[in-house]
Image (cartoon, rainbow, N blue to C red; front, side):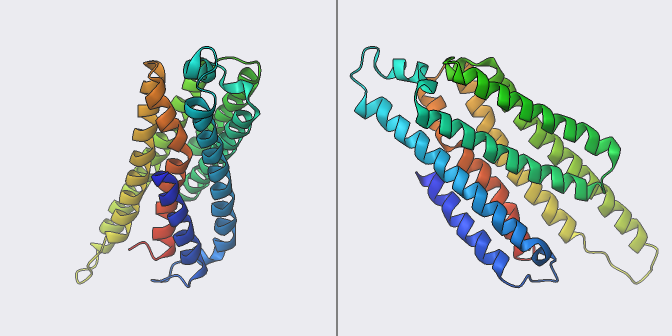
Length: 256
């Protein structure tokens, strides 16, 4: 519940920041309506996902705990309940939106370089295909957390985030170095690299927040730790949203 509260608070802060005039000559106002639409859609999807997960958790441990087999039987029959089908669909759609934003950022930072964008787009399409496959498999009443493709999807999602972070930060580091060399040609000039440093730090912080959380979820699924899995899966969409909003808010406020 606390994670959803933080997600809600950051969504409001992001919306307010986007509606205000950017400081330090920021250009985020040029696409603020697109970003407002983005944070609205992701918040709606994240809220639906969290509510559905919370409701099913309540069913497992309170409402239906006395059925034959107990909570374990309910966990194994996860996809027999329509509420979980809705939850899974919103989880994937939210993931698609957020990974698409990372793909767009990568395209901007690398100036649409084919050597970078072709592999990233291919990985993104592969993630879409795997998520659709999971939906098909889950709809056939397969035990959800025992679906191997779910682990594959989570690993691909972490990999996509890390690859994006490495590509973006390496590009920014190279550009920072080039700027220092260019400015060094002028005897009286001094170059302040704080802007590049701030952006790089934002990217790393955002990637670490979600990646660590997702790795813990992967380990819990592999080790069949049902309680830990339910706890982290319940909050994963909110954490993913928080990681993205942290960057949007800082950039909208001027990145300082």
